[in-house]
Image (spheres, rainbow, N blue to C red):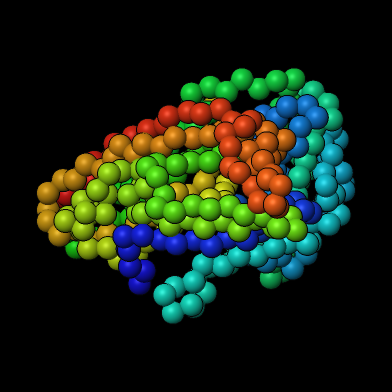
Length: 315
């Protein structure tokens, strides 16, 4: 059982060169293998490119090693070089492991770029990725609807004995963004030999984007389990109103109600710094003379985003 705490402390080591970052993602229940790439990209500008797997494949193959119109840092003939990350419980027991092939991609022509079908073998069964494509343009214009934050529940109504499963997801048209709500209690960034050490002490209120969130939840519910996507990269692709987004888990909660009264959750409020590509993203890290870095707002577009309200109905 994971217990909710008032603050979280993260210590991350991010290697800037050779531009490889380990990550993990949430699954699409119907898929075993899927691409995660921002749906629109600017020509000549680098973006993130990843392929995710529900389980560690026994073998992976495709009929091409390159994608027409997309220059990959690591071509698809190296897709077997998957990274893995795990979720553990409070006793360090592995709950779930995520598998991913990650690299960078640079579009080399305008228009639609179709991705190949990936075929995976796992325990004697064959799985294929769904058809996928992105669109390449000269210049992207950022719109207020390019970021959505949505609370959802697993059921429309609950009995007092039910476990309520709530999730808060981000839906973004862009791979790179920084999401903040409130001010972390401490943050620092230093660099030496191409290494950045980042320390952040974060509150659950800031993660949920709601003032006094922890207090409100504890008044109405017993907390059974908490799932916080610390690295912001458990991802899948999702279609909303005919538009494709990268879906990223922000927070998941399993709750037992203390009363039979309805409860209204939200709205969550965030400030987003959006980067259209990796070139813009790395502009925010400005080196100092002594090998440290300043975090700036260079290259970003700032949007204020609020979520929906969610009513938890009790029978």
